[in-house]
Image (cartoon, rainbow, N blue to C red; front, top):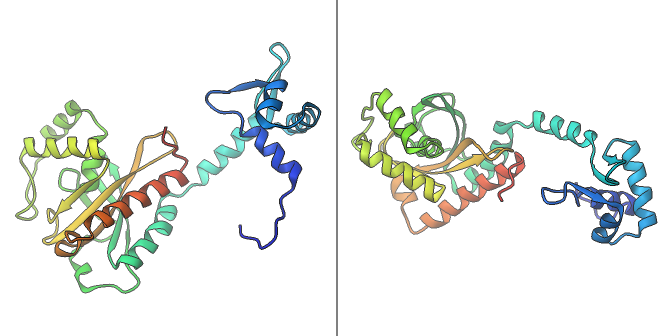
Length: 261
């Protein structure tokens, strides 16, 4: 919401400031603590808490004389969480990046041992080389994609070994990596770096930079990638491209409710 004038209602802001005092370190607080931490006088805090209590935004324990967050906040938060649309949120962020860099972006989610490409974002001016890439709605192998290796990086080495044992690896291009030892090291590297890439392993000459998207509970819910011709991505702008896709992944994660500790 943008406004040229300040329409802030001071009493509402104070009430919100009080609610923001409750966190993982302060799940319940006394009246004196709330007054001290907020810088609001006790009498004003008491009126704010009474109103919040009446509306279900705070709870009060008669025994401990402490306040905590109320069930109404949980209900509203759950409504917001259930309304989040990963694809819609990701597209909004990725379309701007795709248009700016004139490159393709993907959103992928894990479906068992397969990577499902749930969205493909094309730049406003579509270059001819995009005809070489997989379309939205297609599937790819986890082991041969940067996003897939990021998903595998969330698993233990033992779980990755079991995955590699139950699948049949094949080459899609001359660059596709099918050596188990090399793949395991790439997955470990993705686990350390929190990003991954792909050098023409699914489509010749197409390079991708990939970053993980995390959900509310800190688990990886999707991966995003920035794709272009190999000689374009592997240029002096490589670090800049990598930084951009990682930043967009962070922005999407934050909008999905993820808060890194």
